[in-house]
Image 1 (cartoon, rainbow, N blue to C red):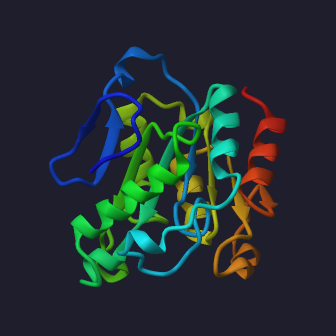
Image 2: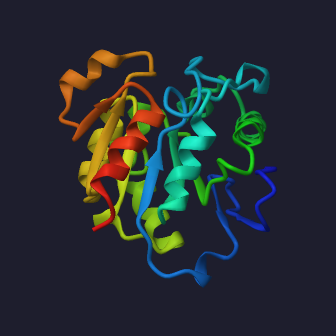
Length: 205
């Protein structure tokens, strides 16, 4: 995997995540967990082709504002297309590389985690399970009680709740905005930039 040029990276053997190599040099920090499809980029459904990646305008600037206020930035994404055989792990990594490229240095992430499981094979790593969030917290030294999740589905909201996060923001840029009525996010936002506005108003506690 070729993430943005933000320093050396450590990859897990199964390529399910990367974390920045200097994470042990920072104190425990709050984070914002970010869904990918429908939150950071257009949801094209089972994206296995980098040519289909379209990061939302303003996403990188929104992430930069969070970072400037002391939040670590972590992508967590269900990718059952791998488990279903629609695309390979290598295809997924090529898509990730394009996402990182479009986010650029301003939108650099501290970690990215994905779960390839199909819903019928799900462990607690697959959202709405909290597994990826807890995994990131252990590896990146994150304070979950001061952290938030931003996503476009009730699975994102529920994952944050099960992980004990401070709260969740549901964005309306995904394919199923009506799901906001099926969960109880702390806020509903037009897009990622608006979600960041809301989180920053809440402030670090």
